[in-house]
Length: 449
Image (tube, rainbow, N blue to C red):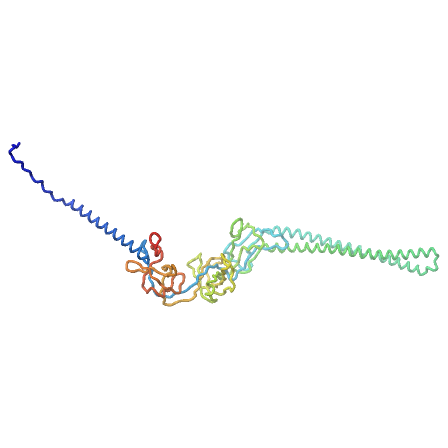
């Protein structure tokens, strides 16, 4: 313990020890993170401002794929849609039966779809029981009427012979009465009256017999004519039934391929089969010659003026995309028909002849026809999917360094895939595919410019 007279000495505070190495590292990293964050915010603000200030540039969702503008030959084509058909084809329909009501016909045998047939081969056979029954019934009626006619003729001949005998007897009696009248003056008075009465009676009898003879002949002729009319009608029915029975089997008129067509049956469309019923006059089958095929296509009224008979084309089948057939425009209808959606828009029928054969080239296949209108040599070619048309301007997104800029271009002839560039681009320029990793051109994230 110190005394009161002793001085109190105050010691200075201890000096701070320098920070350790781990503490200095944490502070340095925190400062760097603040600096990087500030720089990222600044760059983001600058990017947003540049993007809003330059609508010609397209914001990228992902790195877009590009196409290179290059020189080549441009084939200008017009694509049409149509269906294949055979040049030589014979439609087969259910027969319309003569003298019979239009009842349905039942198929008992039919060639399968795609079957190869020769001329005269059976294509389809219908149930003929009704026709056979009708034939037998009408034949029996016809034979019975022939028997009645024969009996009527025999009876008429016998009656006629009897009437002629009676008339001859009456004529003889009249001749005798007339002879008696020649010696009337020498006969007694009462005998004269009797002779006059006998002459009048003989005349009346002859007249009556002659009238009766004519009436009987007319009645017999009328009865015979009625029987003959019935017989002719029965014979006609018999022949109709026989003809109908023969039409129940249809043979192929040519050598070719069987093509079954879809019809409305049992509430749906489908190909006919054995046991199905079809109405008379319904077409359900074709026999086609596959050696010569053609395509029928519809041409819009705006494109018909671009076509000329003789132009070359290529036909592609939707069912077999790898098959390509050369074709030639052989016929173009001069008169259009009303369009599917509007009567004011006309459609014209174009017929293309296909060169070449293939087992898969069959009728009723949907096909695309590319008509070669003209060809441009050494043109700058640009894919059409790289072009944007908006507000009357045609532009592309041209690659510049690591970015893209919108560039106005002038296009010339084009087809379904590429277009010829007249101005705005050079060979070797790279342009972005429209919609490939790009937002809508000229629009910001909120949809506005």
